[in-house]
Length: 35
Length: 511
Image (cartoon, rainbow over all chains, first blue to last red; front, side, top):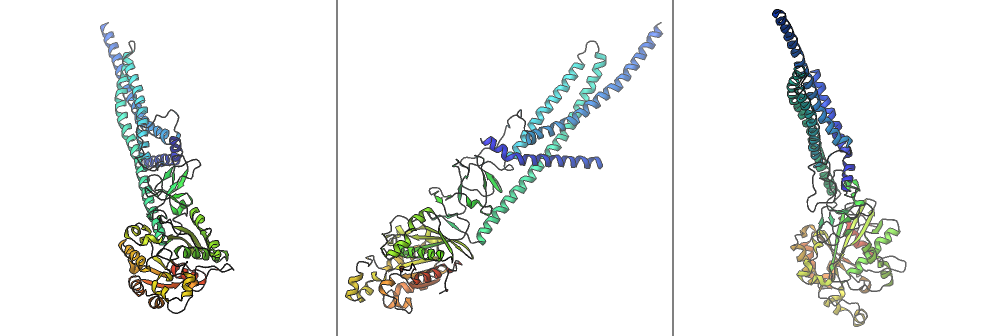
């Protein structure tokens, strides 16, 4: 029960962290290639 | 002939050397590229599996935050533990993928040295592979580490933002309560309630959350273990949930939705039979009269108050006596007053007179140090000097109504000392001294304090009240109701004075 509740509770946060990390990595790589 | 062989050998050696110079760097470059790119990609894929896709094949995380003993039955806020556990989980998933990748490469390299017929051609590929794998894996690991660092940075910054937001919301909520002058008191155990505990509003869920404020279980909302979301702050409407006293040993229901409005603690004290309960009933009835006249809205704050005070107007109208108050510790009668200028929650405490004769019993009345205005009720008939002045016919008429309790001085002194002992600064407190039964003995007019001094011989009491309290006011009241359903005007006068300091403007002129 709690696992399912946790999954549901964290879904949004996890996606946000993943998206933010990918954006940050992409920004870093872009900066390295352009520099 | 041997020259031809030598030339042939040299040609073959040159060709093989050329082969080596091309294949070794090429295979090294390819292996290096595969691992330098593959390892970070494996990390990102691991991150994606843990944070986004969460396939069924995802292994269980090794570390996961556990609820401490006695903690609220709620799910941790993501950035209070689970986010770091996810980072650890993602790195483990990525490590496992990278290991597979490296093992596959190592297998290919081993095979390149294991070709009996073509070892001369496959071995250089293996040598290049070894070099490429070593350099690529090292570079890939560094890049993946940078990616992991970025992930942790995102988690760290988010965690800081979430914690700061939580702290700010707690401060804002506390400030809001302070500005609105909301200080909660449990009507059962008389303790100050910093924040009520709440039951999960989910159907069939009976889990109780002792502190729902922003913190490790949620900032704007928390989630009960049953999955039901709960508001974390009174600002966000947590008061709509079923509230309970958070103090261990009490934990009783706070039906009056504490936290929504300022609470006014109003203790009645005085000797047995002085008329405290009757006065309380008449005040409640007066509030209902105003409520019926649409001048304000007065409603019972909880079912217990409704049960006990529902009969107040009938009892007052019939003129029958109230039954003696139980000597048990009183529970507050809670009335919700909705006025044009806001709402107030009135907590009225009516303890039995016996509680005001000795220190031990008075000490138990923990609500006394939560009040700023006190109501002392005195039955003038119980004052021997006054009783002796009455004509014999009047004495015969009133003897059945006269309180047989000790002098009102005793209850006053006892309570006054106890209030002080509880740390209340009397210079900041107000006292309403109410002489009951004005309907029986009449209202001679003039200064009530002077009347108490001269007619009742309560000079010491009047002097002490006037000297010790910031404000002491004297009233003569008649807790009666006429046939038209109107409560005696003295009750309204008393109520206006009592509630004026708390910003409550009751209908009618200010005395």
